[in-house]
Amino acid sequence: MGEDELERSEIEAVLETRRELGPSYDAALVDSFAERIERAVEKRTAEVVSSRDLGRIHTDGAGKRQLALGIVSTVAAVPISITLGVSDQPLALIVSWAGIVGVNVAHALQGRSPR
Image (cartoon, rainbow, N blue to C red):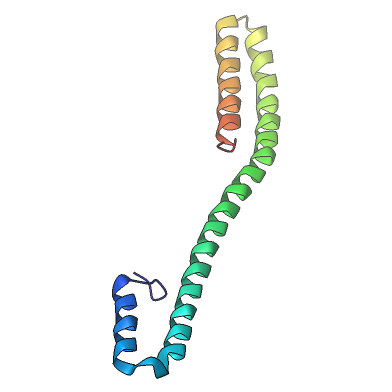
């Protein structure tokens, strides 16, 4: 466990210290323990916010990547279509277009945010 994480043994140690020192040190012990709790809560909150931000950044960038892939696919599809259409190879043309469509669909589905 990390330095700021609270363990059961630490809580027990604070309670035992309170018993040994008596009520005159209660305020100092409570303040110290409250600070540790606040740091632990802040750390966990920051971790949750950070993981949400990473997910949003990934989702936000998906639109730009999808646009770039669409442009590259179109640029690649034109010469492939002309070459295979002129050489009268319809099966090869269908397979090429199916591959281009498949890559674009897979990328679009991968970029969607989970619900």
